[in-house]
Image 1: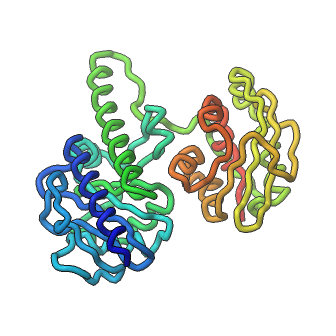
Image 2: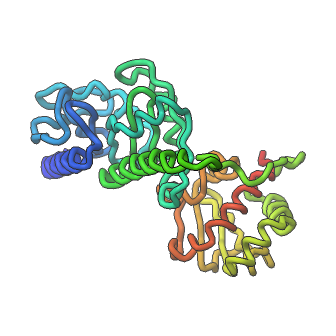
Length: 336
């Protein structure tokens, strides 16, 4: 284990702890932070430490079996941290805090669907996990939730964010806290009006799935999606109004299967078997399955790097509305 890397990671943890504290995203002796050293070891804040006032000795090195490798007592949440790292080799950082607006919201609600566009792109819908103990003893629900989203909420407890680095984790927590804070403010404004709209988004279509099931990423699967997208009047309206003319390729990592969809004003004109497109999205099969089952929003998956996008994200985001419509429509096509 490289001592220089351990020291650098401890300094990173100290810095993020100060930022969380300064943004009122951490308080008292609550919360814990960890970072991956290598495939066998991590550093984790010690128990009963203040995230805003950490010292190097407040951050403990331990292995993924939970064995402490230096003097000190690791956080009571070491089981949660080690299990996450063992299940997700690509995750290098975890932040767990007890933020007030997130905790308050989920005491009264089970699900949050943001209306702010930035929050939609960063994490989409958030559904809380029931937490019945002071420290996490059952990690399975957390692991399942993190397969679909890089941030999850433990009801009556706090929020957990994971990522390639600690800054990614901080951003997720800050954006969720701000989105819920903004939602709370909007309710105050809306309560002063006689007529109000629902606070949370609902699907714009009633999805009736196909009777036949298709093999994922087969020609028949893509052909059926094209048929449904081109037959949808709302999609044509959104595509025409936004002048959605582009080429988008979708690719499965394991097989290399690829389909290039050529759009003109929102209508798919042609399908090709190559990736010579302005935008290319690739992902493992497990992620594509979750996307087609609407368990993961493709925009969120791209932002959280579960999917890879080649192309200008800012440019494709101007077609957010028609693309979202496509993602809703393609869930009609059942996959095997």
